[in-house]
Length: 189
Image (cartoon, rainbow, N blue to C red; front, side, top):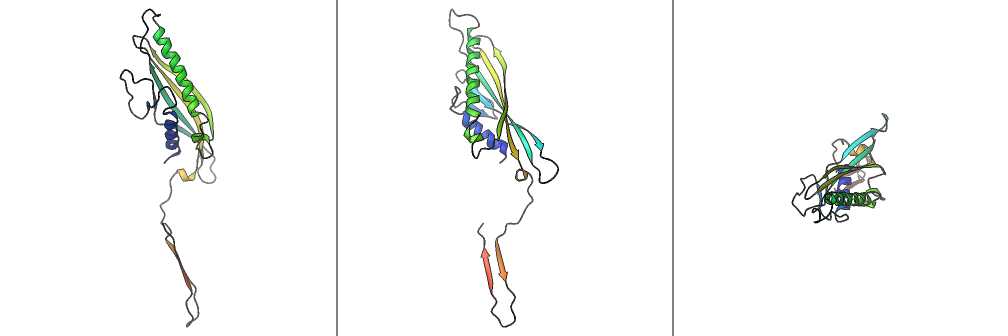
């Protein structure tokens, strides 16, 4: 399994149940559009960019993994007698709250950056509001991008096919008529 897959699984687990979206966290699938299914979070496959350590030694890279989380929120509409854009404003405020919850659930999460976590540092984040639609049920969407740095070394790339060592037989040559000493070690696989 690649480092990026491990990071994505940890991110989805970190977001599930920790934001206003509850368990509405989806990976690589279409998200629900039925009324009452919002807010939702969509985590598409992660992007990665690697910079080589140089041309001597085994291949190794400093890798920047870019996580994108799309947050979508739909307001149930304006209350009778409220201002016409009250629903859009409420959707935008709810989206800001959801943005902060997503960042808090991921950044400095021990499953990602702890003792055995795959991340060395969180290098940047960006949040872009991509849609705020007005109407009877205003819809708001935001893209939250978080750059994380990790290392990929020789073990993450092509590995030559090898034959596993199953055992060792040691025999010592002795003059004729002498007992042949020997040793056999079987290695369990």
